[in-house]
Image (tube, rainbow, N blue to C red):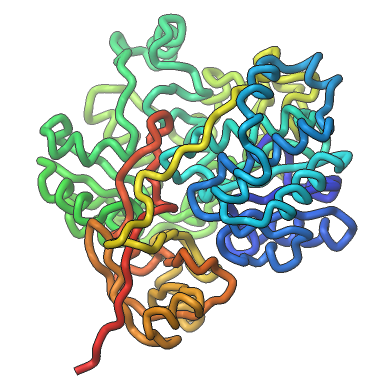
Amino acid sequence: MTNSIEEIKYAKGIFVIGANPVENHPVIGSKIRRAKAEGARLVVADPRKVGLAKIADIHLPLKPGTNVALINGIMNIIISKNLVDKEYLTKHTEGYEELVDMIREYTPEKVADICELPKEDIIEAAKIYALSDVASIFYAMGVTQHSTGTNGVISLSNLALITGNIGKLGGGLNPLRGQNNVQGACDMGCLPNNYPGYQKVTTPEVQSKFKKAWDVENLSEEVGLTVTEVPDAILEDRVKLLYIMGENPVISDPDTAHITKALKKVDFLIVQDLFLTETAEYADIVLPAGAFAEKDGTFTNTERKIQRIRKAVDAPGEAKADWIILSELLNRMGVVANYTHPREIMEEIAEVTPQYGGISYERISNDGLQWPCPTKGHPGTKFLHENGPARGKGLIKGVAHQDSAETPCEKYPIILTTGRNLYHFHTKTMTGRVEGLNIKSDKGYVEVNPKLLKKYGIEDGERIKVTSRRGSVETTVRSNDGIISSTIFMPFHFAEAAANILTNTVLDSIAKIPELKVSTVRIEKIKVS
C-alpha cells in the first residue's frame, strides 16, 4: 500500500475494485465502512454485490475481465470534464498526452457496452472519485488475477496520477495483500528476479554486494521461474526438485490436474508445512514447521509495517521454526549459517536491505515501523511519494482493454469467477480444523443468480455439475441475486468441490499471474436416480 490503514478515515472518496474487504480483509473493511458512515463517498466495482457494495454510493457490477475498460472509461470522463489535477500532472508526471490520445475511444457508451453497465453509473463514479479532495483506491486479486492483471494495475496508477491522488494523506493506490506476510516475503527476495529489497539479480553491483554479505563466490545471475511457471518446467524436465513451504498448490493453483501431474512427475518433492496438506500427500519428505505462535520473528503486513512476533508456546514433536530448518539445510550444503536467534537475521536484513536499514528488534519491540526506514533514527514512512514519485516523474502509460483468454461460447456459456468467504483462509489448512468455522461453512458451494437458475430449471440447494475445458466439479447451489446473471462464483477453499479443477492456467505475460478470475463453464443439474 502507498498509504496506511489508519489513513482511511481521511479519504473523502474511496474506490474499491476487485476486492471484498468485509470478508477477506475485515479490519480494512470495517475502516472503510466507518469512513463511509462519516461522510466519505464510496464506489465499488465487483460482479458480486459484496459487503461494501451494499452501502456504496455507486455499485458497478461489471462483467469479469473488463477492469481496464472500466478504468479507461472513468479516465475518459475525468479528462473530458476537465477534472484532472493540472498542477500535479505538470510537476510530477510524464506520458499524459499519450494517455489522452489513447483514452478518447473509451467513451461512456463504449465502456458501458464492454462492461455491461449503465453509462450513467460510470459517469457518476468518475465524478465521485475526481471531485473528492482526497481519494483512495483499494484493489486485490479481482484486479491482478487476470491475463491482463498488470495492465489493470497500470490503469489504476494512471487514474491516481491524473487526479493527483498520490503522495497525500488518505489517498494513494492500495493493494490488499492476500496473506499475512506476502509483503514481507516479497521484501525478502521471494521473487525470481530480486534479492532482498527488490535489488535485481541481474545487476553486477548487487551481485557483488550479496556475494560479500553471504561470503560466497558464486550467485546465479539468471532470473528464475515464478511459481506458476514451475509445473510446466517440471513436465518439460527443466526442474527436478521442488521445495514447497507453507503453500498448498493442489487446492490453490489453477487446473488441479495439471498441478498433480507435475507433482507426481518431479524427481524429489519436499513440503514444509504445519499439517499434512493435500500437496504434502505427494511429497517424498515432509518437514514439520512451527506455527506463528511457536517462533520468534517478524511479519511485514499490507501497509509495509514490520511487526515483531514472539514465541508463546513450544512447537509440538519434531516441528521447528522455518529459520531453523533453513539454517540447518544451509549448513549441510556447505554454506555457513550460524544464527542463534531471528534477531541476528534481522540485523543482517538491515545491513543488506535499504528499506529496512533502520529496523531492529529494539525499535519494533512495542509497535512496528513502516518501510522505507533507511536509518536508525528514521521514523518510518506512513505514506509514499510525499514529495513526488520515487522514480522522479510518475509514468502515465495508457493500456488498451483486451478480452480474457476465455470468453463465453455455445459449449461454455457462463463465466466462472473464484474467491474466498469470511470463514475460511486460503486452502483451509488451518481454518478447516476449527469446529466453529466449519459449523459456519463446512462444504463447497456455487453462487448463481436466480435468473440463471430458472433458465436451467435448477432450484436453490440442489446439486449441480460445473464443467470447464479442464474438468468437472459437483457442488451445491446457493441462489444469490447479488451476482450478475452471466457469472457464477465459487470459493476455492474446499477440496471436495475444488474450484481450481476448473480454472485456467493462462498467465499474465508480465507478472505471470494466472487468470483465476475468468474461466468459462457450463452447468447442469445432477439427476437423482
